[in-house]
Image (tube, rainbow, N blue to C red):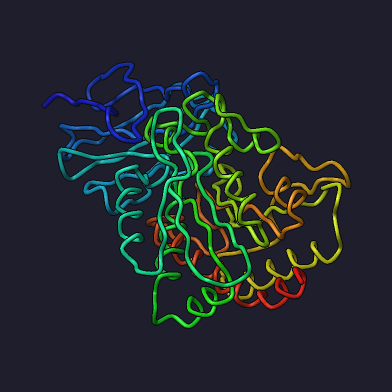
Length: 377
């Protein structure tokens, strides 16, 4: 049977170069109107029992090529369970080796969270009687920017994810956060909903998600560099969300992402903003400490370089919201690789672990919410 490769589906990305027996040469396609690329998601058919050698020839030119070292691709035969497969990076080529048991196998940079699954997530959450669902506006491709409002408390908590669409772990995290927040028997959820109102945007970049982009929207724009001056022409996603934030205010915010290189979960803060306050920074530290106590999958030793005083990048949401609203804000980063402190050789960092970390993040917020209330009085 002849091998066939396709990516003409929701979130797909690959270009076929050549097929030679069981070896397939491929290239990742750049984001539209952008040089960014690294996300891949494709299907191989006719592959049952065949020792596939999949070579991504342009991996060396990817946005974060240093992230390929120690990375393992994911494969699924049912599109539900994703496991790591043998992957190596030499020179400029990423080579994936696997022997599927069925005639259809899907390969991806990380377990995909497609727009179809996003719609299922929104539909399920909107059925809860305490959830308000609406669209904040439309993207350049005409997709809705889904928004969920949960809770009745005075604190304004914003959770938003997937500004970079290829970081699909961010929406798996959102799935876990919504599961916990909407569990009426969960005492942490009940307390949080009474003390705060949650404003949730599970996917900030629907266009990039459907198009199979790594980092940008339909116009090739990195949304997390638009928060100082978003526009309807370049970044309507940020424009609409920021307008809603102005209406609700922001007391606490988490922007959920994935990191290509660091094999750990970590937070990045808002150090370096012009209006930095010690008590604001102390609350960020208190939250980080609480999360580290609550989850062995979170750590504080590895992370990004901290900005010097006055040197924060205010085009990024975490810094912009901390500066604009005086809020406690942070970026959560999860790995494409694994958490090396607590590895899983079979699945690596996985959708289930994203969901569990989300639950811990909400527990950490509950642990410090009294301090946030005091800070905002």
